[in-house]
Every structure is written in structure tokens, then in C-alpha cells.
Amino acid sequence: MQDGLETATRVDSKTPPHHPPGIHVKHAFVVGHPIAHSRSPLIHNYWLKANAIAGTYEPIDVLPDDLPAFFDRIREGRYVGGNVTLPHKAAAYLLSDERESLADSIGAVNTLVRLGSGAVEGRNTDYLGFLGNLDQNAPGWSEALNEVVVLGAGGACRAVVVALKSRGVRCIHLLNRTIGTAEDMAIELEGPIAAGSLAEFPKRARRAGLLINTTSVGMKSTRFDGLDLGALPQDALVTDLVYTPLVTPLLAEARALGLRTVDGLGMLLHQAVPGFEAWFGVKPEVTAELRALVEASL
Image (cartoon, rainbow, N blue to C red; front, side, top):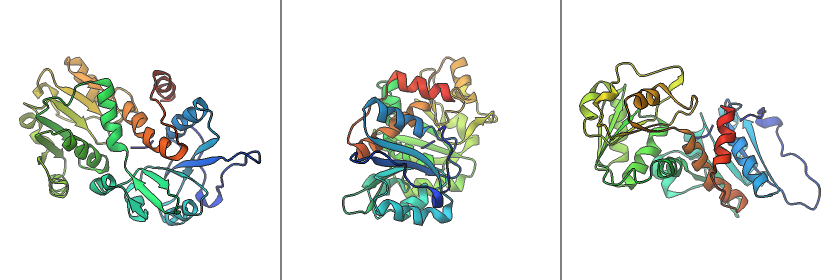
């Protein structure tokens, strides 16, 4: 899940910035198309400054056809690694020379690390970002959690489902507008996944302790039609991967009903931690100051 304020440039004209001689500077990036909306540079450059690290992190607009050539730049040592956002996560998975087992389970990567051999390893930290966000903002959320409703069956959903399986959820109701897509994902990811349509929400939500929106619904004033959150138990938790706006229509409705909510910004912050540690050798902290900084940019 990657999402800045700097102006991106085409990969064929981009080279790392110059620094004084004698200082070893590590360069990292986030690539996507488009990329100017990404908050990742704001996060990583905050950590670079906070930890006094000689490094850079820049947004780079890479067209799909240019992605293989960009991977060659990483192998050449121009970058220690970086993040991958839409629409490149699936392609980056295929282009990676090696992949962590978790990335193989999810079938997509959002983090690239250049190994000592020069090979590019693909990783997926959306899994850790999702878990870290809920663990921090809703402690104990997964204890005795039997049923969960997940909305959507796209790329972001895969990491969420794998994360839920790791916490021992007994039944994951995977609801999507196109049932076939949800059914295919349920078969591919295996486990206690019950596919269905969004129209089945009232029935599937009755015993759900957690509702997760993994779709883009909520952005640009969009909202779900006919999704009655009143069908959820009163002690249910509702979370949304969308963080622009911070309070989506789904979260606003949940709050109006007295349900607990967690917004999606924390997932963006927590998924960034493992990559920064891999590239720069320091494990950064997700602090209230960092959250306020990013929140002010939304």
C-alpha cells in the first residue's frame, strides 16, 4: 500500500542527486505512475533527518514499459532499494530476482531491496502495515476474533487476507461486486475464506467482529450504496485502507452508529518501517509527530 509532495520525473532522465565527496549516501525511491500524490517521500525523509542519516528518498514516475530498465538501475547499484506503488506491484513481483516467502504468498511486492550480490529482492510490507496499524490503534483487536468481513478482492486485499489468516481468524467473508473474482482469490489464497457478493453483507455481517474496506470506495466522495452497517454487532471494529479523506464515508457512518473505527493512515506509516530499516540500517519509529506531519498534508 504506497502512496508526497515532491514532483516526480521520468525514469529515463532521473539520476540520484549529488552530495559532497567522502560521504557515502544511500539512495532509495518510490516508483509508480502517477506518483506525485505519494506521501512516502514525506515519511522517509522525515526519518532520514530524525536519524541523521546520509541518504535520499525520492518519488520517480516510471511508465509500465520502463519498469524493467529501472530494475537494471537498481542492480547496477544506483539505489539500495525502494517502494513500489500502483500500477507496478504485480509487475515488480515478476521482475524481482528473489522474493521473500510472504511476497510469494501474497503475489505482489511493494518493497524492493538490493542485495549484496546485486540481485533485487521483492518483499511485501503491506501485511505488516495492516497488522501494525490495528495493533497500535485497537490493541487486542484479534483476540477471540472469529469472523471478519472484507470488502473488495483487489491487490490490496491479498495482503489483508494473508494477515488475517496469520492471526487465526476462523472465517473471512470476502465480498466483492464480481463474485467470480472473490471466488478465485479464495481458492488461490486457501484457508477459511467464504466468497460472496456485496449484496450478502447483511447476512455475513451478523457475527463479524471486524469490517475492512480494501477497495478505493471512499476516495473522491464515493461511497457504498446500500451497505447497512447496522447489521454489524455493536462491538465491531471498522477500518478502511483509504486514508484520503482520513475519515471516509464508511468510517463516518460507523462512528455515527457508535462502532469503533481505525483509519488507514496508520497502515501507510507502519508498512514503511521494514523498508527503511532494510535500506538504511535503522528501525524508525511511527510517532505522533510523524502522523501529524503526514495528516497535515492530506
